[in-house]
Image 1 (spheres, rainbow, N blue to C red):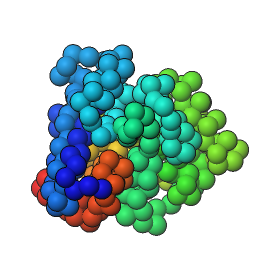
Image 2: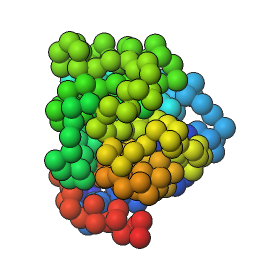
Image 3: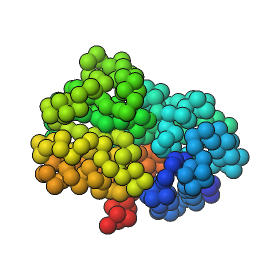
Length: 284
């Protein structure tokens, strides 16, 4: 990459003022000697919803943005507005990174590898015979692909929209083999037999406090993973730790999805260890 070229990136999502992503990208850009600017495009602050995506994409192109990260609630709504998808994004059916180059909008998914890397680092040796996942949205699709890639034998997916859980389960079974994923029906019964629980819903964020499952369904034998990272300790993790569960917060996923997005935006391979240390420093 031409070191004099400015990287102008942004994050589109709702309720993202607490996001660490801008600082992660800009600090690594400084360390790499790049002119790197990263801006928040908060739908809540702008009093917009995902229907504004077409106009936001056009505006980003006109202002010469290099790329955009996409988060809740836009990871699937963005897809019809793109020119092409990476194989990962196409297989997952969700996009969290859009590269704007040569008049084209190319969608990528770095959430999947981000969660997988965080899972390997944060829960080594975790039992993965039966896992319950809460949420079947854009982030949920990426995490589900990561979980099955990491060896989960049976993934039970629960969502407030049961049809969405079924669509995701069908997609996963096409990719990983019949019977690897199911749309969950009986949360207490399924969770009682599970090794682990993953929350991929926005429940637990500062703007959506609470837990995706009743606290009474948690037990010490479960490992519990989050993708929410602001706050880093959600109510779910706090209760799980109090019971003695092994836990994984959303920090590693946040960092490692950003590592790949940085490379896609800039063409420069970042220092992942430095970005992880930087993130940890922000949350002390």
